[in-house]
Image (cartoon, rainbow, N blue to C red; front, side, top):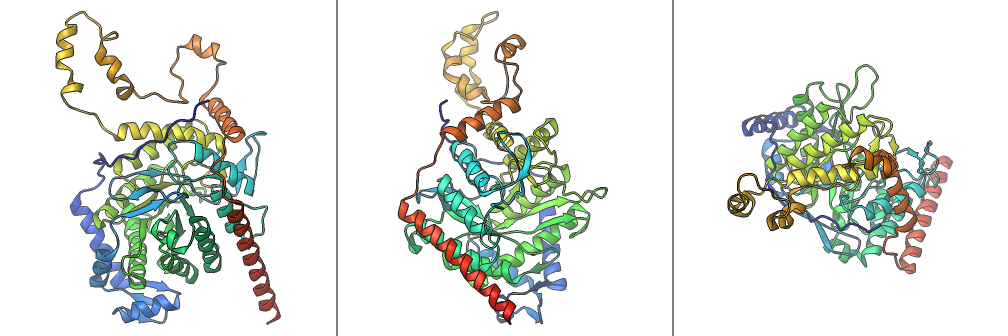
Length: 494
């Protein structure tokens, strides 16, 4: 089976604008009012001092941020952030209307590829997911997908990073338990990159950190972000909410509160370091009032993301959003609709980092089969996102005249020259007649995707790390594990 070459990511004009420019400005001014009147809670000492020195009203941990300071920090935030792959190649420029797709992280359960049974995720699942994403061309970055639950819980995030860098060369987004583990991951990344300065020049890793809704910025959340800026590593600092639970139930109210949390992050980032590479956005999911489930695949979620993407473009700051994550527990028709709709919307609205692709069961379960199916959904969305080419060649007036009434175009050179570009061809969808489909085994798309996933797992390996680097990664993990165990003992004795 031939490996398909990766797509080049084109910068295009998005087709989708959900609200008017005037409404985006209304949301912006409402956000400024929330930050100035209500304010936020900040539990990080350095950030509190920076905010106070910059002119904020600080009462213990409550911080009210003046509008002028928000506007000033928005001007300082970079409009373009370039992310490299593991080899230092600058492959992912985050700028307006460039859309990249990847998975999410930390799924507690996995559908076993061999048995089809749902079980607890392990480090091996992280390795296999990264190997599949390394192979499939429409995944531009990776997150861990699974939790390494069979490793030490104190450093499972470090094990996940080790599994990621070992099994893919693609850019990656990581999570970290706390600032201590974040600094350990930064040392691991510097080791892989060839040194701290090489990592700063060509960062291949992004941190995902977040405030706690509503309007609370934790010591660890901010601390992890500040640590990354010391290494020149970009940070996704975005809220993850439940509309109706941690934000107002209205879509507009949800967006205002999330935007206030994100812009407070921008302010702290720029006060820490001018031009700090920060990415905004967030997980804007409502809560099902019947079951309390997180509605990843709902229409409201994608409507929220469309507006949040417009906001990030209004500010000129790269954004982080979601698509391809579904509430269906298995890769069925519901999953296909939820994933396909979200992925297409993300592409058409020009979002930047689109994560959580391949999530089942509202972000609890992973499936390599579904991950493989989503590769084709992304390919379809990208094809539509390129738009229709209108020029002399494609309007084909001369060709129409040559063929004339009653003729056919099958044998014409113009058809041979253009059909591959003008007609999308799926790698997994069935487009054969019934009889041919039966001759080929009457397989569903899910069955074909499962076969492909098994083939990738059995045959594909990423470019291996040097043994010295691999040993160094393991040493950092062991040292951090011992350090945390020692700290825990001391705390108990105290």
